[in-house]
Image (cartoon, rainbow, N blue to C red):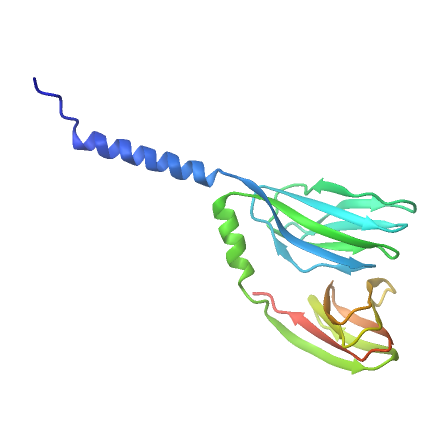
Length: 232
């Protein structure tokens, strides 16, 4: 008795179908991943970040008497979403979805009497996650706007940014206290933060014009660097 021989073409098609099904299942295996997290106190703006999947959400944990506001600036479409807007009183934790479909943006955090932690979580498949991790390896391109240093006491520094987006890096060199504020020409404090431990900290400012950097240092020398972001 002879068994029927399966044509090689059918075997190839069956293997190909299984391979495609397996690859499709892998690509559609989504998971939520925390891609960025920021902690601080007072007012701050974050760096640009990319959004890779089709769903993203913001998690926030404020600590303090309020008020507490988070705005998401959609740089792809030029729109703004209010993520959190809590007035005076006990502020609460939350998690809010980002509206619409966008691939890039940043947060504006306004919390003059709060410390806080804010994170962005994205629902990614393996390909999106690979793209995210590859992009994280790319260095940020900047050009220097200026460097200033000092010791205990007060200092006001004026810096003019001709266009766009810039980063402030500040460092205290020993235990003490360092308070840094950045005020724009309209009188709005876009950065207002303080530290009590040594080490470098940073904040981003999205806007052009002349800004005043105010420094109050107690028992510590300090240095501040300002860098302008170079967009590709």
